[in-house]
Image (tube, rainbow, N blue to C red):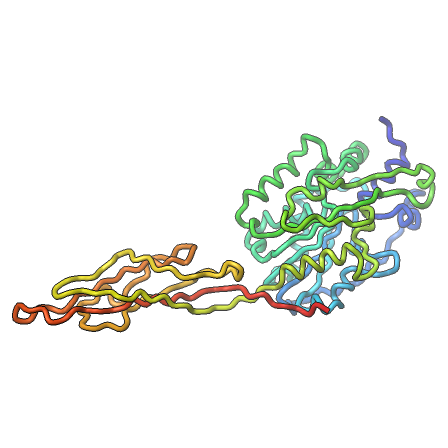
Length: 400
């Protein structure tokens, strides 16, 4: 089926995260290009807070993609919201021309990583992402390529990210040879998206990163200029593509807007904003704490000329999974010792610690010797294992 030039213009418009009205205002419908003012966003030179919220725009987008019709700018709404008091805000940007781009998703993921490093994003203890459309794909590719930094990422909230591709991208790829359109196509042979998901699910470096998803509930329609006479309706990213592979513990969020406006909340009560706020609240900043906890094995005895020893005594400690507790070290000692002789090794040695917190201890001691062929006493002792435990305690930020 032949697609008219004006239909093609709409397709590019949908992918770009621009409304036909903004396209018309820029003079692109007439083949003219005018520069747009880009909002100035201060980038912290060093982390001010333990967490950073990173905004990553979609295909053909920019730092201005997050601005609503009433002038509200999502990053500014977050930065001035006391419920995000312990987070810095960074608005990311990467080159994505409106047509005939030359870079693949892998190349843009590398550029995105470099920009985030320059913005000191990876200096924060925790990193979270708000990603639109292609931005969600780039974030996943970037994290897979940088596992050490991925360890800092708590969660990604994707809005309209085509995890299974987009029909619009497939059609657009017939007219524009931008490699990104092939990467985002819903064609059955799209190896890039299939392999990306397979790599994500099989990579230990990202297994702990939650993926939360929102999807558009409205078709993208023409509003202004000559395109309005065509009255096309386009669902840029469908429900299943936008929600594929996301956390099942938090249901996908419907955003009552089209692909373009779903990331342009008018205020803090808008569904897109409220969804991220709730995800953020349910996944608070974690503060590392080191605590000690003991387990004492009592009733160890050894008679005259006898030995009490165990080269692999297994001593457990209770761990709280809700605080992500893990044992980082353990030491052993004999306490309350009476008539104990020839302790070996001295002190007892913790040979290893299992991931579930069980310490393996090598200890041994002898009882008293006989006097005049008579045994007058029995050795008694207790084995104390002191565990050093790292745990992560939620930091509660203001909720009003």
